[in-house]
Figure 1 (cartoon, helix red, strand yellow):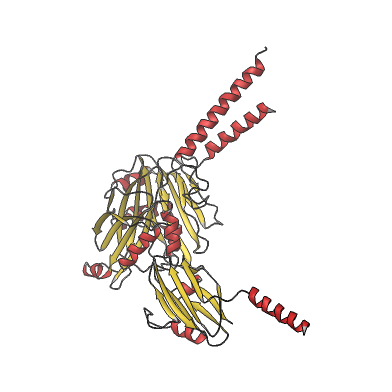
Figure 2 (cartoon, one colour):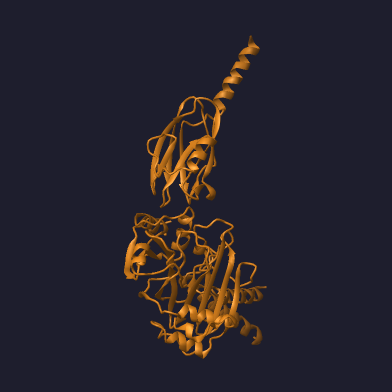
Length: 128
Length: 340
């Protein structure tokens, strides 16, 4: 019994010490690059993303699987405003969106404006 | 121990002072954000403290508008139509084997608001000279229909930190077609810029290009005497000095007789720089010291402003310190040689 109590305490302490994945994430865009190449978030809970574009040109923050990105590479949609996982951030402005990843997954986020993905506007989002 | 140290320090400071880059720099035009794989030709003449930049904006066909954004070393005193054949005459001078027949020759990261310094129209070109930080100029360009590529924010800041003057040229394809301009026709533009030394921004030529895209350009430089250039034209860095000699009297006479070229002196030195490299490796500009001494490493893009290029104040303080140390050194020397 004593041993079990100690074990539970240790587990609880470990849980308290482990860094919790943030539910609010701020990503900055500068010189056509995201400030973070990887973002870790909790699965199953809403996460609010604030994306700040410091550049004098428009950018995008598009999150999804490979098929979604392939669709947008060939797409003609100029502005994305109505979907929380497809965000256009006009020059020198900030946009906020909230997403829930129901299960653990790894997806990519990127900007699909011409030449921006090739220039390095790609990051990885890990929900766990 | 003390005296050798003073001598060494004086010598070191003297070397630093003489090796110090010239402070001011001049400027040149670059292409627009659209990918342009063609070789470009530019003429930069420098005489009596004034840079004359002549380039041609080529009509590529089609309708609509497209633009070019160019960093300049200072505020131009005039932007006007360039001479009709200056660039062609320079090509002929430096490529005599391929010369055509004489008959053919007839032919601050700053978010400051941008300030419009000058507007003018030359044929189908709407030209605006702007002053502002990279972000402000980028916002202005975007608001005026320029589609800036992904590398534009960094490159605009790179130039704005050296000189916050840019020339935006919007080419109206419909107006060009209405004027009867054909694909390949160029509109020569002559920009006059008072500045302490000429300067040619080359990195801007890579704007909007992929890393392996070729960048090819010819820069003709006419100065009163043989200039000092930075970076050195080594060839392996994509920069070659293809022509480097006293300008011929016939060339100078021909240039002087073209429109707006009356400033061309009776003697001069002609340099032809060839740029043959890729966008990924073109990370420099061409800094020139027209007196043949030390071009600025900052102007060449080899150092960031404030990092290694002394300001005039710093140079003055350096010179004063050097003079004081030399005086001390001389006094020390006299104390040694004169017996007590």
